[in-house]
Image (cartoon, one colour):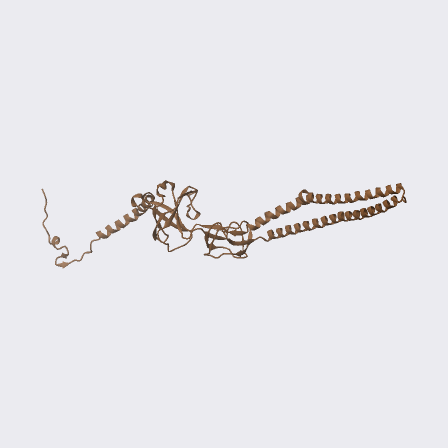
Length: 353
């Protein structure tokens, strides 16, 4: 049996009591409901964000990268001093153009000392050779004079012999003396030629020649080392930055300047090898700058496989894992040209192209 209560005046006019109007507070049900939704949002939002970050790499083809002109750092071969800067920032240089001249005072001193030693050896050897040869030439001259006198004396005695004025024994002594003078003259000439031959042997294979050869080799090595102090451009490029000043001491650890091999900047993306199907020529991608701005880029060059990410992109757990080095060319000129600025690249899926 259903019980029905009779209606009262309160059910019809709840805000009136015995003719007096009573103002009740508004219902707070919506406020409580809003606070509940807000509390639920606060609890669920970290889970949603975590799920988004975990699912994002599976939904999109993402890769870190940098904007660069691929500059080459030109370094000093050893500890030296900057002697002269031969280029300025922004200069376009050809291959083998001198960029920076370095100097090493100790190296220059060694080269000068070897030159001095060589000149002293050459001078000393020339004086000795000339003195020895002059001595032999003097002996030839004396022997020649003696031979001429003996021949003149032989002719006179021959006339006296024809007249019967000279005994045969004296004539024999004169002939013997003339023969001895002739032999002395020939011996002097032979000694002179032998001295020239010995000097040539000494120059080519003697101890002095070995010393000169050793000095020449050492000097050649030092000059080669000195030539390396002239920093040359290995290819055609543009000077993007100079990091040294004249008079500054430099070593091989710090670049002297940066030489860019590209006229316009490109985007270098480092993609995981599992996305090998997305590195073909003509592949499009969206590049996101740190400011949030984006631009489109396209692959126009072959892709390379490198051993690891650059230091500025490497995380604490990345290690040296292989990645694909993808070069993308912006479809429009960039408003910024900051070397090495990090970017995020999102490659288009095949169904998007």
